Image (cartoon, rainbow, N blue to C red; front, side, top):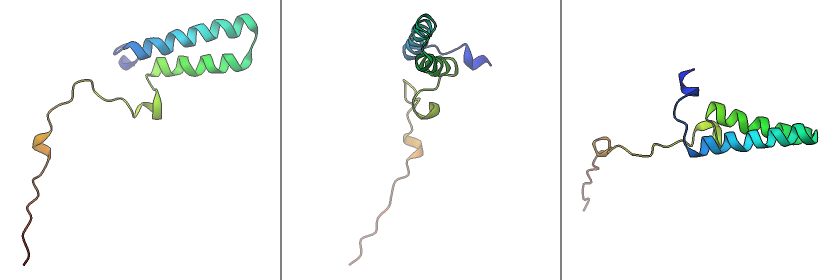
Length: 78
């Protein structure tokens, strides 16, 4: 539950704004398709999922992972 109220970045706020705007248009114009699109954008904003169900979220600052890379040892064959 705590994840729903933290880490609001620009794209998440943009999805929220688009969802609210489309929701207003759906109600004002009585359009079901626009209402479905609004619900999609609002769910993406609330649960912080974008592409591939949130699997595309990468950290802004990458940690140094050199210690995880193993050096390959090759032996010359004559």
